[in-house]
Image (cartoon, rainbow over all chains, first blue to last red; front, side, top):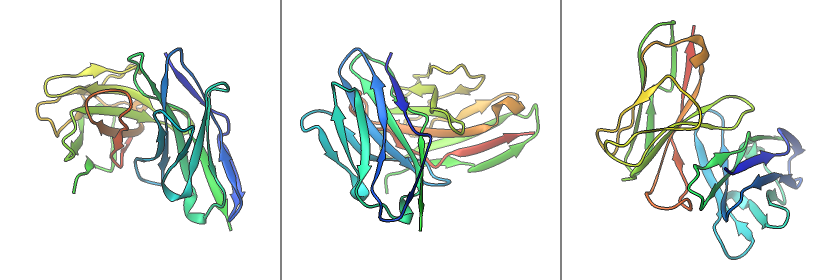
Amino acid sequence: AQSVTQLDSQVPVFEEAPVELRCNYSSSVSVYLFWYVQYPNQGLQLLLKYLSGSTLVKGINGFEAEFNKSQTSFHLRKPSVHISDTAEYFCAVSDLGGNDMRFGAGTRLTVKP
Amino acid sequence: EADIYQTPRYLVIGTGKKITLECSQTMGHDKMYWYQQDPGMELHLIHYSYGVNSTEKGDLSSESTVSRIRTEHFPLTLESARPSHTSQYLCASSLAGGPENEQFFGPGTRLTVL
């Protein structure tokens, strides 16, 4: 079965600074990768996903992620964060092996003024 | 507007009570899911359904049960709630088909059992 590791449980950053949220996965078959965001008292919503093709994926709200097969990583980046980006971010993986989608434990991004 | 709804949003109940958490979606999705979410931990799948009259248990053992009598409705029931059931419960849905389809989430029900 596949698994997901989010390397940082909390990431504090100042407004307008760049940020990277790290995600590593393991799977024995081809994968599909997702990043979701959860704002306080809300459900998860999709930021972006990688299915195939270009390894750099652009999502909503200025976020992007890069799929690196050799490093089994799918890190999320934003060049300049806003206060409104404060939220919990979840990396998820599904694969062609028939396994259910697996989610990481989440990274809490806190953007300070 | 196509969406996924959960009620109640917050529930505080005493031990031993029977509860039902409601989940409805107007997206026309065949697949639906229930997750348990606790702080600092990954989301755990407790139940899912491929369509009407289909229900399966997820990877996290749960004392709850689900039903799928209508495509749009996927309620979760606890016959006798205990403090260990205190958690956030998230409902989600997706298109049928392959693992490339993303899941759409409701706002969650935060359950506290005293």
